[in-house]
Length: 306
Image (tube, rainbow, N blue to C red; front, side, top):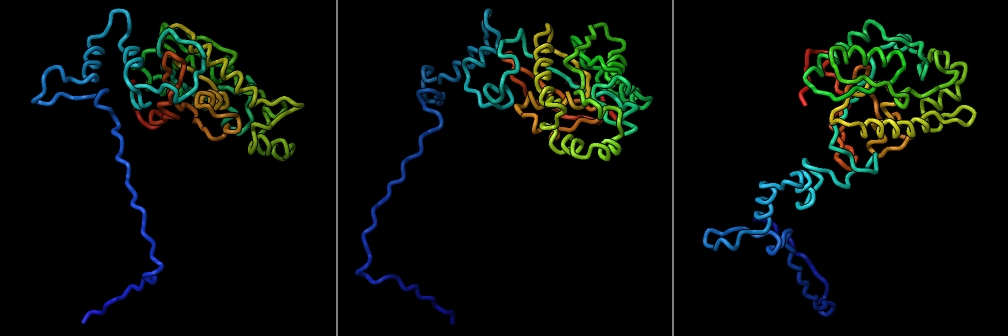
């Protein structure tokens, strides 16, 4: 025989009448006055406004591009089509068109191999391995049409850009704002020696780079300023697709400034030698990161299509 559990409540005299709670009816996400639909039994006049709007956009206008019609008339969610307000403009001015920018880090350098602090020094040169990495980047991007290539003028990046750009007729432009951060007397030192000789300074550089400074000069904070200058120079250039070849630190600054991250997030981003990243920009200069540090081409014959 099964057991029975008794639940004993409070004395009847202590019970108070409960107020009835009326749950409000949820509001519809879309009002029928804004977005109705055609029922099989309804007349042709009951076709919803959204359907009428879609037809108008599909027909288009001679004076207004379809993209702008959609932006101005449809409710955007920040999804696959557009990203209004999701990010901050890097130009604060309308661009002539939307843009796509491909970022590439230079190939392996001599000071990469020797684990030396590179900075803005021009003494670190592209190695044979680095040259092969640049050729792999060229092959991987062979099917992508670019309007121009922007590169740091520092040797290891310059050589990488020239190898990637070989065979193309569009301009190759060397831009000072794409130079690497200047790291003063640490440049050229091995990381082991720098840590031993300047332990406090080197630890700050590795663990708190935004506050790394020499005589009151903060290289990483300065890099954020030059990154914004570089973005403007690139984005205001006529054309729609650009290639950028430069160094790890300035790449971190370019990516972080585009994502609205400050210099304290400097080491939150990593880019390998030959790594490829891509951004798209709408006409308002608002960026969307599409790919970060792609390296499939380093280990295969992969060719990117976009």
